[in-house]
Image 1: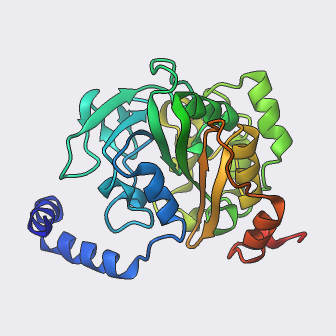
Image 2: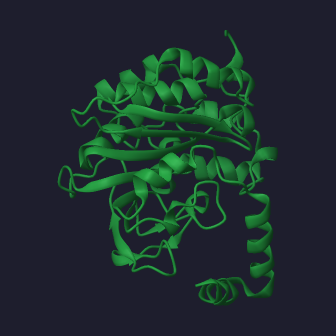
Length: 292
């Protein structure tokens, strides 16, 4: 198994790729919430929204690809600025030792091609901020989950990203967008994004004119962050979608990890306000600790 992994990494990135994978594995500890994620994903069938994601791969903070039974995936177009060309069908290669999952080309906030209660789990890493209607997306993800199915959600913490100059999105705004049925062509936040984005913290693009042009083409490229999260906002959005919380973990360098389940009718321990306040007090992100 180790030899196969070595060969796979070597073919993809050569000797340098192997060395980087080893260093990443040594230096990157698992998130504290990983055991709960493993319980949700282990041996089961799920769907990822906007994958594949390094955080879920071998050597990542939440390496659930290695324990999943099967993972399908949704991307919004046949070509994206993150993945390049995308082929529909059984082409989602989430782990070199496992059969590929089904690749859908659909909106992440509209999974109407997928029947309700299809999957055991949903994964999403750094995608929710790219959708104009996060509550609609969360509602769809809950719909395709079986009762008791789990969700592993990762969103960026504003304080540690190029969004740090922007105001946090109020929960009331997410609710207004949901009730208004806001679509992915919405550019309400475009001027704020262009005015406040700190390109010195963007590892992908540093040219201001190129950034502005790409942002204006968001209906095609989906590059902007519509909404800006701290841990409480991300948690409240998940609760608003009527998930049951299992873990909340703000984690450097810029992650907010939330593990939750779709209610099943079986009584589960409640992740209450006191537990959340304890998490926020220990958060590495200043805005999480404000007002406590």
